[in-house]
Structures are given as structure tokens and as C-alpha cells.
Length: 478
Ligand SMILES: *Cc1c(COP(=O)(O)O)cnc(C)c1O
Image (tube, rainbow, N blue to C red; front, side, top):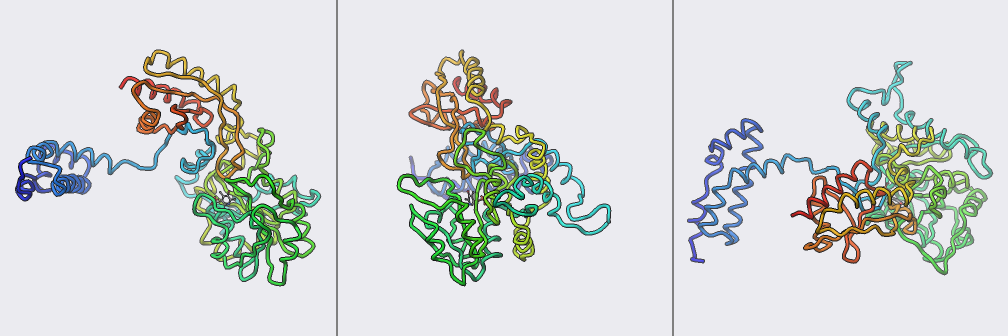
């Protein structure tokens, strides 16, 4: 390539103003507004200048780029004005996928959210009295109804369970620790000092709460006596943390929740449990063992349970603290509560989600509906997709056994039997095929294993099956 003077190359570029004066660009500005079009013009010109500076363009290349500037500008404008947060198809089989937004909301939650948020609402207003009210009332009684059967249970609460809602479970843990143990010690088993999702670490949250972590036991074994011996006049709380996302197997020991509760009562120290996922239905009915629900903890006599709104509850992002009324009242009056509280969108979606539980309409909650799907039902849908792909000659489609994953901090062993579409495409590697699916509109996210793309329809909404089939057909033709 003949060495061209770079300043000569720059001179071939129009100025932003010249670009804006092109008839097609003027028209675009009339339609889309001058400011965003001018910004797009600056971006595309800067991009060509960068290429010149990097030495990747010769004179002919610059001329070519200049001739297509108005198209580049239009593309840039489209990209800049597109909403980046958007719907994707989850074919991973991970029901509560943190990267994919965890629980999809129930239709009833969306309806209620739209109704409440598109006008004014009684968020903090007692309509009958015409007075200022509290936002908590909108979920308090629904939670109390859900937990009513636990009241009076053997070790369970003696009066209705109270609940407050904050931004997420991390906030709930922080608020619980700060209220109940600031300046004092919190006893935790070493086996429960977990990190969740790369950023939630119990020791760090503890430090921020102003409570002092008192570790007991070892990573794999902690006995009730270890807690007992660690109690002193500074002890404020016994904390149990659900071991989300990992398992310790083999030579392990952990006191039963009931032992911890018994110890707490004997020594007059509250017990708080960070349950994480916090199911509101009995997962044993879905064949998932070892995932205790909120009701299990309350029935066992735990004083305060914290859990997420968008994990197994299947609602919006939120963090709940449910438990003994006196403790929840203290938590509610902590000034931090004001900083961590949730808005009307969350209350609207959460309230409608809880109502589905009260009505026992569990299939209204997408995450629960997906968890309850049988492998046979999934196979029937996979079979229908496979049939429609028969004529896509470059595709090879098989239906194979697999496991769907509960996710969202449920135990890694919490999996469900499923049937997967295993797809390969002649001329494309599995990674390439997966990338093409992700580039689809809307993006389809699948797993790649052993040289095949695996699609689990458990987490695909039934009405999206056709979309998956059309994407695969189209990709196989290009
Ligand atoms: C998921 C999880 C958290 C964090 O909850 P967020 O709602 O994501 O803030 C904390 N503790 C446990 C045990 C969890 O599983």
C-alpha cells in the first residue's frame, strides 16, 4: 500500500456540518430530531478518523467509507435509540437464571403493575380515612395469610407473622443484621460463610452492618455445642445461612434448625436465617428435596427469615424479612429501612404474585409453572419442534434426556428431569450455531455441550416454541 499522507486522508472526510447538510441526512433530522442525528454524525465520523489513525484505511478505503456515511449514520442512530434491556428466550433450562433476569412476572402482576403505576395510587394513603398510610399494608396481610398455618405450630410463632419488604435479599440481610446486632456479635458457622453471585459475601455484609462476625466450627463440621460455647454477653444473634449454589458433602455435620432455635430460646438470643431462595410452596411436591421453604423455617421457630422476591417466590426483585412481630417492628423503624425500601412497582407486582399463592393458583406464576412441567410435557413440545425442522436439511435434531436446573441460589443438586432438543448444523460449529441463535431477534440463549446445542423447552414459554423453530430453520438456510 503506497504510503499516503494521513492529513491528506483526513481531508477527504466531510465535516459534521457538511454531513448534516446531505439531503437524506437533513430528512432524517427532520424525522428523528436534529440533536440525535448530529450526535450520530459525530460518532460515525470519529469512527472513520480512528480507522485512519490506526492506518487501516487507504485513500480508496476512505472514499468508500465516505460514500456510505449516511447509511452508517442511520445505523448508528438506530442503535443509539434502541432500548438495550430487552426480552430474550431462555432455552438454558435454568429456571431462575440471574443473568437472564431471574423470575419472569405473572400476567396478573404485570396487569396490576400497569394499572397502579400508570395513574396515581393509594401507596401511602388510607382512602377511607383520607389520611396518610403506610406502604407496607399492601403486602402485610397477604403474607400473614400465607403464614397463618405456621402460627401456633409446635415451635412456631405464637402470633401472626410480620413481614417487611426491601430492595433485595442482600438488603434484607444487611438490615436484619444492623437492626438486631449492630455493635454486638453474630455467631455463624464457618461452613456458611458463603459468597453468592460473586458479590454477596456474608463477612462483608456483616462488616457493613456494624455487627461483629463470630465464626464457629469448621468448614465441614459445626456442632450445636460450638454455638453454645461462643455465646457471651456481646452475642446478639445466631445466624444460619442457606448454602445456596454449593454443597458440602461427605464428612459433614450441621446442627438442625430446631437445635439452633432451642439454643436461641434458652439463651434469649434471636435466630435469623438467610434462606436466599425462600420458596413459598413445598418443593418436595415437585420432587425437589433439601430446599427448605419459608414456612419450614417459621414452623421450626426461626425468629426472622430473609429471602428474595425474584427467586423461588417468582415475583419482582425484592427482599423479605418475615418473622416475630417485635423484631420486625424494630427492623421497620431502623432509619436504614427508608434507604432500602421499595417503590410502588415492586409492591404492585409482589402483591399480585402473593395473591396467586393465597388463591393456590401456582400455575399463574411462570417460574412455578415451569418447575411443575413434566418431562413428558416438555418432550411433546420438543417433538413438535423437531417435526417442523424435518425439512431443514442441514440440521440434525435429536431429543435426549437431560436435567433442568432450579437456579437462583437453590442447591446445585436441585435439578429436574427434562428432555432436550440436541441440535447440530452442517457447516457450523456448535458454538457458532449458539452464537447465531443469540444474534436472533429476540436472542435465543442455549447451552453447548459435547459439540451440540442443547435447548431445554422447560424455560421457553410455550408460545415461543415456534420462534425457536423458525430461528433454527432460518439459520440452517444461511
Ligand atoms: C440469592 C441469595 C442472596 C442474595 O439475594 P438477592 O435477592 O440477590 O440480593 C443472599 N443470600 C442467599 C443465601 C442467597 O441465595
